[in-house]
Structure formats: C-alpha cells, structure tokens
Amino acid sequence: MRVLFYCDVDEEGNIIESIAGELKRPVIPEKQWDEFFLLDSWDIPNNIQNYKVVDRQLVLK
Image 1 (cartoon, rainbow, N blue to C red):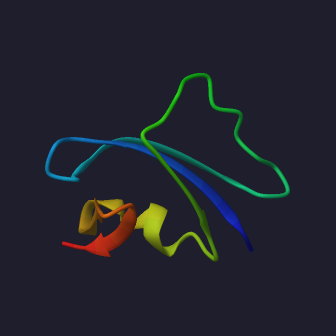
Image 2 (cartoon, rainbow, N blue to C red):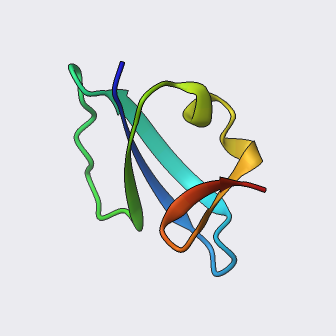
C-alpha cells in the first residue's frame, strides 16, 4: 500500500508536524509542507518519532 507523507522539519531535520494518507484515499494538504515522501507502508508514519530528515531523505535517528 502506498502512503503519501508530508512533514515539516526544524533546522536539525527533526520532524515537528506531519500528515499522511493512502494513495488511493489521499490527504489534501491545506498548506505548503517542507517535505513530501511516497512510502511503501505505514511503518514510518506509525513510528515517526524514530525518524528525521537528512538531505531530503527519511533516516533513523
């Protein structure tokens, strides 16, 4: 299942706000987000506290 994931990050790449939705039932962003990712599952959004953004990539902290 494909997941659309939008997030805002601080200066260190820590995710401070995010939204996600399935590709077949997408969320419609109401603002401009810092980053966007198309993911293969809900694993990252469900464990977002373990991730940050480095060089426009989601990485484990």
